[in-house]
Image 1 (cartoon, rainbow, N blue to C red):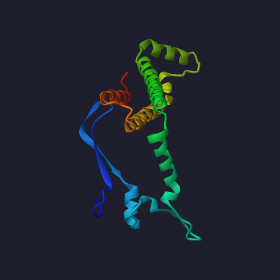
Image 2 (spheres, rainbow, N blue to C red):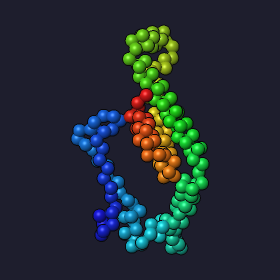
Image 3 (spheres, one colour):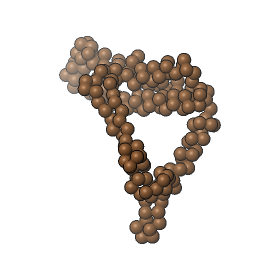
Image 4 (spheres, rainbow, N blue to C red):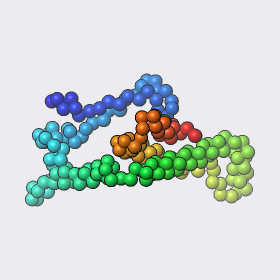
Length: 185
């Protein structure tokens, strides 16, 4: 709290990727806009000075930079976005994420397969270019899978805010996103 204004949030993690954490870790998130509003003594984040021209002193406010996109994304996400298509986006991202996770699991499995290891060694000894499992794993787009999981979470939040998810569906959808984040197949 800063002069009665909440500016931080603690999030405690008991698990990460399906692994119990000991000790339990915490994330401290700062509300930078709130800190700036306090420091600049303004009542609205949209009145925060974002930048000031050093020659003219002209100020660009946070609202000049971010208000239009905040309004437009709110209208789209909460009023105009097609719910059926949003469901399709969720399902497509989920399917693509699962595909990537399955492909990576196969690489991991092959990396432990003695026949695959022998084949790679024989290829290398023959002087041929070896595109090893290890090399494939290093360049594998796990961040792509992570991004798709985040998109699923975002689509869930939009659908939930629009009232497009029933109380009984909610638990199942959360479980699906959680399974992606854990790498469950």
